Length: 570
Image (cartoon, rainbow, N blue to C red; front, side, top):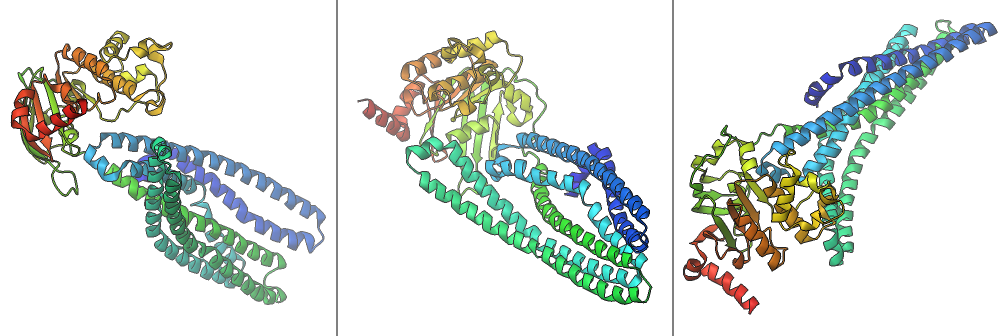
C-alpha cells in the first residue's frame, strides 16, 4: 500500500500536508476544551464569577467555529487527494491491462480485473481520505490526552498510559487477524461479480431457457458465502470497540476513585477531575475511530496487494522495431509451430507448418476445439508459439513493432463486439483520421448499406454490444471496421456465419477485389472452394492442406465435413 501512496500522493503534496495540518488544529482545539471547562468549574461556578463564565463560554464558541472551519478545509483536501489518486490509479491500471498480452489476461479473468479496477481501487481511495483526515488526528488525541493527564496528575497519567498501551496491542492483534481474511472476502466478491456479469451478458439466454430461478440461486449462494466471510471479519474487528469501552470505563472508575481522595486533600480540583473524565471520553471516541481505520486500512492493504500484482506484470510479448512489412511473395511461413495454453492438459496446436503467399485466399476448417481460433491468434501475435517460429514477409514476426502488426492486419473476431458509440467512432478505432469516404467504401464492401441508408448515417448510435442491430448487421460492421484502415492481411474468424448466402457471396467477391491476403475460418466449405490453400485442423494437428478438390481425395476429415454439409443440402 505504501508503494501506491509513494507513487500517487506525490501529485498531491499540498493536500497531504495542509489537510492533516488543519485537522491537527481542530484536534488541538478539542484538547483545549476540557481545560477550559475545568477552568469554568473552578474559577467560574465555584467562585460564582458569572463574567468569567460568559467569557470562557464565548471562547468555547469561537474555538468550536474555528475547529469546524478547519475540519471543512481538511475534508476538502482529503476529497481532492483521494479522488485524484483513485482517478490516476484507475487510469494507469486500465492502460496497463491494455498492454498485457492475452495469456496474462486469461490468467486473471475479466471479472477479477473488473473487481481490481473498481472495488479494490475504491478501497485504496477511501484509505487515502482517511489517511489525511484521521490517521494523524486520532493518535494525536490519544497521545495528547495522556500527556495532559500527566500534567494534571502523574497517577492519572499512568492509568491513561496503561489503557492506551493495552488498546494499542489489541488493535494490532486484530489487524493481524483480519488482513488475511480480507483477501478471502475479495475473492468472494470476485465470484459474485463474475456471476452477475455472466447473467447480464447472457440475459437473453437465461430468459429463453427459463433459468431465472437457477441463476438466482447461484447468485444467492455466492452472496451468502460473501456475507458469511465478511461477517467473520467484522466480528473479529468488532471486538476492539467493546474492549476499548470496557477499558475506558475501568479507567474512569479508577480516576474517580483516585481523584476523590486527591480532591479531598486539595491536590487537584473538581475541574481537573472533569477534565480527566473528558479526556478519557475523547480517548474512547478516538479508539472507535481507530477501530474503523483498522478495518479500512486492512481492506486497503489487501486491495493494494492485488492492484500491485497486476501493475507488476510485464507483457511476455517483446516487439521489434520493424515499421513496415517488406515486399515478399511469401506472406506467412509457419514453421513447426506448437502452442499450449497455461495449465492446459494438452497442446491446442501441435507441429503445424504451412506457407501463405501474398494475395492468397486461405481457408481454415475443422471441428470445434480443433485450434482454428488459436492459429489465427498466433498469426496476429496475440500469443507467441510454445515451440516453432512464425515468419511474416520473410522476417520473424517478433521483429515487427506492435503498431506495424496492428496497422497491417485486420481482424474480425468470432464474436462481434461494438462499442456504445456512433458508427463512425466504431469504424475509426485503428485510425481516427480515416476519411468518411473511406468509411463509406468499407461499408459498401461489407454490404452494410443499411447504415448509409439510415437517417443518421455514420452518426447512427450503436447500443452497448450492438444490441440494436441483428447478428448479421453486427458482423458486417465489424468487417467494415477491419477493412477501413486498408490492411494488407484480413483475418475472418467465422465472421460470415450470421449472413445469408447471398450477402455472404457478395462480401467475399468484394473482398477478393481488394487484392489482399485473406485468411478465413469457416464451417461452410462453399465459402472456400476456390481458396488457394485450405488448412484442415483436427485436435490441434494439421491433418490436411491443399485445394478443395485435392482435399476431397486425400483428407478424411475434410471429406466428412463435406459429406455432412452435402447431406444437409440434399
